[in-house]
Amino acid sequence: MTEFDKKLLFELDKDGRKSYTEIAKTLETSPQVVKYHLEKLQDEGIIKHFWAFIDYDKAGYHVFWGYWLKFAGLTKEAEAAMYEDFRANKNIPIVMRSDGYADVMLGIIGRDVFEHNAVLQNVFAKYGQYIAHSDLVVGLSFHKFPRTYLIGGENVSGEQKMSGGAPGEIKLSQLDRKILSCLQIDGRMEFTRIAKKCGVTAGLVQKHYVRLVREGVISKITYTVDHEKMGIVLYRVLFKIVQFNSARAEQLFAYFATHPNIINYVRCIGEWQLMVDIEIENRARLRELLRTLKHEFKDLIFQIEVNEVYKIDKFTQMAVEYPELGE
Image (cartoon, rainbow, N blue to C red; front, side):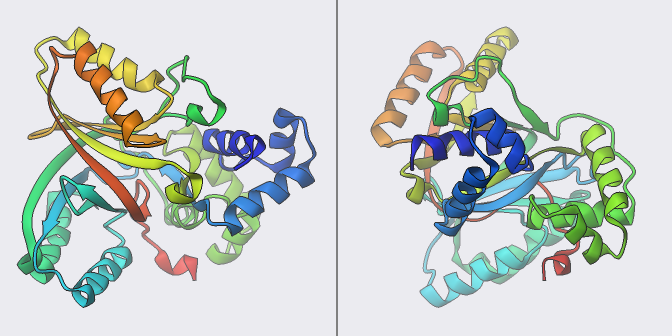
């Protein structure tokens, strides 16, 4: 990628619905140049998917837990059918295949424990014969940071967006939920197209969208990338934390928030206390980062497990309640 591509990706990471004109003004170029480069990034598969970063608690989904699964005896045919099933399940918004601690990480979302458990039991009923090990990560809140490594800087302000972890469900209409589904399917979908799918006016869609942003249901529009095509590696790292000192724990979170290569972290309870997403050039750079963390926070970090993500089948923060709107 060119330096311009990286700057463009950074602007889109801050706000994926920015217009060509808005981005052009920031990058001191023309809207036509921005449009050309964005379409090129999409055509080449570097940008795979724009999606709305939604606060799942405010949207009424209060149980969003992760499962690390290790397989044994899984045939290619069974594997293909299994992943097709995972992709089709609207209550499984995250499917990340990995090497390392586990073979896949599934995020399962539900309005309550009962809905969540129904999805989980269905997974084990169909594929339990292949699951050699399962590890639960109970997520409390998801913190997302800008990809400042794209512009060679740090997130000095500690800017972040958050999903979950705060009380207060927002009452959503059917139209609100249809708009959320459309924006999960394509975060840059035009209001006119959403309106046509929902059978209302574009003005009404825009009005509802503004409210969803104002009330914090939608934090921003972001994207998923093809890391191999970007020339970078995604690692999802699990941490066991000894939390005897809350002030020190906050210092660790602040370190995550400002480091240019750390793009997400999830605060958890249970067996693991943190799950961190790191986009970095190679394993050597990751090793250097983890060595620094172990040294700087040796009083907090008890154990680290590294998973190298080699394929993302799905990644959003919300169930697509109306998948037919993508047809």
